[in-house]
Image (cartoon, rainbow, N blue to C red; front, top):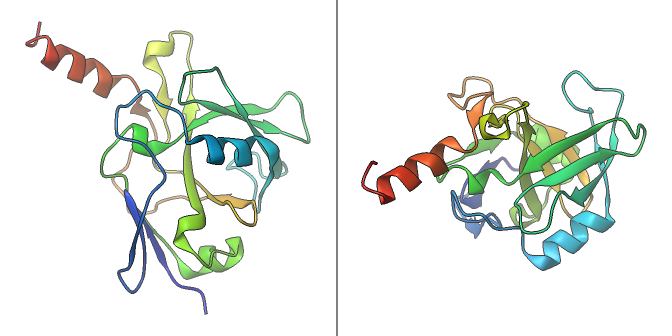
Length: 179
């Protein structure tokens, strides 16, 4: 029987057991751990239902975006014209959390919450300082099976357009005494 998984800074199964999340500190400009990065860069990810609005594309591969950044490219293996910029939401917000339902747990073959990786899709406009992250529709990936799915967090207050640099800019301003 599948168990619901709560995804936050520590992943937990429905019995309350906490397992540390692999993400970084909110606002930190870091990349994923080397071991995880190597797995991601060498694995074909199958998004079981595709992406919202792009359901016919299900085969993807992670590629580093640029060395020293927390960004990755999610490149379609079915169309060289389709790639998205993604990142770990834990680098954006401290309390990013949601429950993953039993059906999704079963569909992705999740048996150990430690195998769950969460990424969010970014929208990069002409001015990159206005970049946003879709926190309402995160990608949940089972690192063991390489199956993933974009989950819509119905009833959630997480925004579709969370300003990526807004928090960093506020923190920088606060560190300078609000100047």
